[in-house]
Each structure stands twice: as C-alpha cells, then as structure tokens.
Image (cartoon, rainbow, N blue to C red; front, top):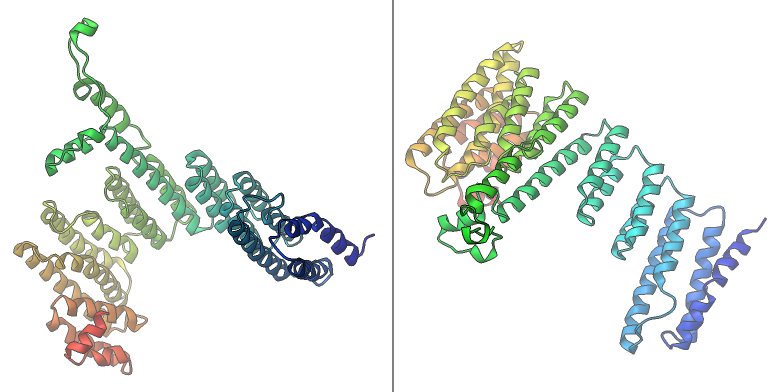
Amino acid sequence: MAGASDKARFYLEQSVPELQELIRKKIFTKDEVSSIAHKRSEFEHKLSGRGSTAADYARYVEYEMNLDALRRTKAKRLGIKATSYTGQRRIFFVLDRATRKFHGDTSLWMLYLSFARKQKAHKKVAQIITNMLRLHPASPELWIYAADYAWEERADIAETRGYMQRGLRFCSHSKRLWSEYLKLEMIYIAKISARRRILGLDSRSPQQESIQDGEDFGQDLITFPNVTTEATGLESITADSTRTKILERKIASTPALAGAIPIAVFAAAMKEFPEEPTFGAQLFDCVAEFPELDCAKRILQHMVEYLMAAAPADVATLTCFIREPLVGLIAASFLLPRALMEVVDRFELAMQNVNSLEGSVEQTRTRGAISQHTIKCLATYLEYPELDPDIRAVLTAMIKTAWAHCLQALKTKGPRSSDETITLLNILRLHGFKDLVQPGVTSALEIWPADPHLLAMTSDSPVVLLQQHQ
C-alpha cells in the first residue's frame, strides 16, 4: 500500500510537464518554478498525511487560484495567448479530492460550486450539484442554491421547480425553503406578465400606457398585421379586435396566471405548519412584494381568509387582515380613500376579535402589538407632501386611536424590549405627533429608566432629532 510520501510524489510528478512549459515560454523563471514546486510539495505531503483537514485543502485551493491568476496576468503581458496547461484543471482536481475526503463539509462544496460557476463550467456545475445533493439531501440551503442556479443561469422553470419540490420532500420543516418556493412562483408569474405586456396581450399593454403618458412606443411593439379583403376574400380583421382579444382571454383564464400555484404552495406550507400564523404572515409578505400582478390581490385575499379562519385573534393574522386593502396602493392613488375606509372597519373588527383572548392584560398587549404594526403601515402615507387634507385627517385620527392602544399596552409592560417602542416613538416624532410622543416616553422610562435613546427623547434639541432620524 502506498504511503503518504508516495502519494505526494505521484501528484507532484503529474505537474512536471506544466512547470516545464512555464519555463520554456518564460512565464516564470527557474527559481520561481522551483518555489512553486516546493510549495506544492508542502501542500501535497500535508494532504497525504493522516492529520489533514478541510482547511488545508482550502488553503491549497487558494494558493492555486492566486498562482493561476498570476500566470494569466504574466502571459497576457508577454503576449502569450494560451498555454497547454491551465490552473483550472488543477484547481478542479484539488477540489474534487477535498470533497471526496470531506464530503460532509458543505463549505468545501460551496467553494467547489462557486469556482465552477465563475469558470462557466456548466456541465461541471451540474455534476457537482448532483453529487452534493445526493450526500446532503437534508440541507435546505443547498436545494435553494441549486434552484437559484437553474433559474439564473439556465432560466429553466421546470428544473428550478424540480429542485424546490424535491427539496421540500426532504426538508418540509424548512420555512425558508417554503418562502423561497412561493417567491419563485411569484417571480415566474411576474415574468410571464411582463412578456404579455410587451406583446400587447395584456389590458395594461405598453401601447395603452404610451397613450396615457403621451409617448410613442409603437416602434418597440410586436403587432399583428391587418388582413384585407383583397388578400383573403374575407372581411378585414385586426389583431386588437379578434386574435389578440381571444388570446388574451385564453391566457388570462390560465390557472397558473390566476395564482393557482402560489395558492397551492401556501396551502401546503400551512398544512405543514398548521398552528403558526406568524409563518403565514411571512408568506403574506412574500406575495405583497408583487402588488403589480393582477393575481396578487386574489392570493392575498385567500391568505387572509385562511389565517382568519385558523387564528382569528392572533397578532400576525390581524395585522395581515388590516394591511391587505393597502397593499400596492401609493398615496396618489384614487383607490386610497376607499381602501382607508376598509382599513378603519377592519381595525375595529380586529379589536373586537381580541376580546376572545383570556385575560384583560393579554388583550391589551395584543391590541398594542396590532396597533403598532398599523401605525407603521399608515405613517408611510403621511410622507407624501401633496396628500389630500381629508385623507391626512383620517390617517391622523386613526394613528392617534392606534397609539392609545399602544400606550395602554406599554403601561402593562407589554413590549419585551425598548427597541420597538423607540422605533415607534421616532416615527411619531418625525411625522409631527409631538403631543403623542411625550406620554409614550414617560411610560417607557418607567420600564427602561436607563435607556440612553429614551433619555435623549426628553430633549427637543434639533441635533437630538437629527440623530434619532439617522
């Protein structure tokens, strides 16, 4: 059986032709090549010994990467277009040995993958991913990485879904994997919707948008030609009146574009986590990042209905219930007044749902937590300088009502830390609610008397206000 020295000598002998070529083409001098051979000998003897570690392989790979970068730089300066031997092959060789010996070390696998992707060795990447997932099927991060590669590099939705779905079979307990899968499906719908608008198959087509904006994007559109009676003997038909409308109706009725897949993913995720409305709220946030999609409203409504049926008195559920009408609406939207009326009704209903909780203290704290999220949501609209005065008045009244619940919760020592309270007080101060800030600071100081941020809020100095804003 070969010893450690024999293995090291065998691997070193394989690099002799490469070193000879470096000398022959004058990329490196004899002394430099001798130094390279000596350094490789040290690494090989260390790796062939019994005490080698994953870090030793990582250092060896780092050395070879730096050496290859230096070789390419000097070859370019000398005008040498290519060499018979490249550092890429040797680096792959070392990484392959590393992952074979320490197959349980995921950091080595990620190093292997990142280098292969950087070299654009796509076949190698596919092989590495297959071997990696075979050895680590219970790692959600690796499944996400594989899906990310399939989507970004190959733009293959079928392969990406395959990675996600297989990953969920092994890692159904991973909330991050469920969230990433739901986000993937929303991104895919957004991509398809964008293509429809470019092709003029959407009611919000680029042509219509250009008419509204007074701009001409007709030269960038793909339009169907008019068919005349001279050419066909039939009545003249246009794409807008026939083909486009028929195709638009067919595509719009497709379950995938209507949000069927995200709804199915949400249902499966909540089946895996039936008593965790907080996770349902996280999935709600994932979908809320795509308010421009026609199906987003339907998906969010389905999520809210499910959460209200499963946990009607939970903070996360009621927060989503209140926020849902405002998702995607800007301060200048003509739909904002109607949405705010619905938010007011939902806020009152949420406060009533809290009555089902046992204990007055628990009810007060839950109302405070819901009100805190509501204030953060509504305060963003006050930043719009041209906001309608009536809408501003409604927002101000609702924020004051919500703050009253927060103040009651603060008096019962509801918040676990001062961070959330300080953030809320800063929001109120920055939007001109100074009359609400002082009682909050006084109550908070009773709980956290030594907090420097709360003590700073007792001053009205502009410098303090600027520091708090930053």
